[in-house]
Amino acid sequence: MKRRILALALTAALVSALSLPAAAADNTASADTATASESQMLPDSVLYYGEISEIYRDDNGKVTGFLMESEYAGELVVQVSDQTFWIDSGKQTASNPDDLKVGERLYVFHSPAVTASLPPQSAAYAVVRNIPMDASCAQYHEIEAVTENEDGSLRITTSNGSLYLTVDADTKVIAYNDEQEAGLDSLQLGNYAMFWYGAVALSYPGQAHPSTVMILPDIGENTLTGTEMAALLQTLTGETAQLSETAADNEPVTLEAFVTELWKMAGSPEMQGYWKLNRFDDAGKISWGARNAMRWADSNGLLAGIDGDFLNPDGNITEELAKEILAEYAGLTD
Image 1 (cartoon, rainbow, N blue to C red):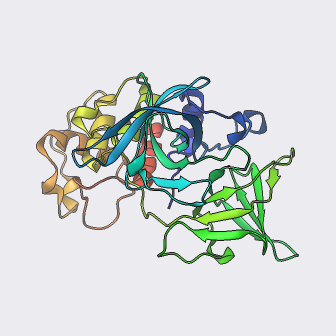
Image 2: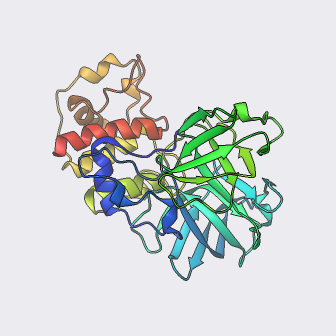
Image 3: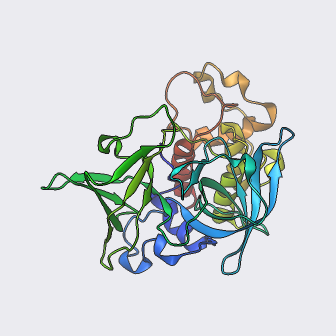
């Protein structure tokens, strides 16, 4: 259940180039704690707090996104999908987005990949509603490490190592849905959860003691959406990816569509007489317009992470595979 977009050679470029409409500086680790020689990671998510000014729905009335406004962070178009979690912070339950209303104020934990469009767009990981004014609000975190303390409590490491959350027998543990089990043993490395906590100790790493933890279900491999792809490619080139040729906003991106965008960035080189892709049983499924792009990618080692006999060119690309391809591409441009 990985949400990481990039690491390795791309991370420094992404950190310096992305313009993040974040509402609170303390949600990301201070840049002063890292050096240029270290391999840095993007924040797992970015927090935006604001008010809904417009809601987008499909033909069946299902919420697909909304426009938010914030006095401090400006506008943000939030793209939602079946992988977005909806949380009622006050009731500490899952929430139904069907009754979303203009004027509602929300916390949105979204992807660090943000398009350079006006207004910017980003994919939502968790949307927090019904925010109490006099109590702590649910916070979305990846579990980066779990350490058992001598007293039996657990220390959860999150926020790129910048925050320790201690949970114990007094911590209320709940599940996002009825199909899950809820207990301290559900807090596993790589999983995600919502944590309710108040003040954070002014130390590094910061420390807090959550009163409640909500275990989120594993959504499996996270596919790359059009919005996320556009944000990543804009960061690399400063140019806007043509979503009309790849995928609309929150729709999944196929492998060949993703590779085609990189091929265009490389100058669309012709690759006649290259036949090594035939080692894949389904190479014939590559669309005519993507053949040069796929040949170019394979000849430069960008498809080395694909194992087995099937290329699946028209299948949705996962963030993990996109990360591997982009890391190889970065090596070409060094």
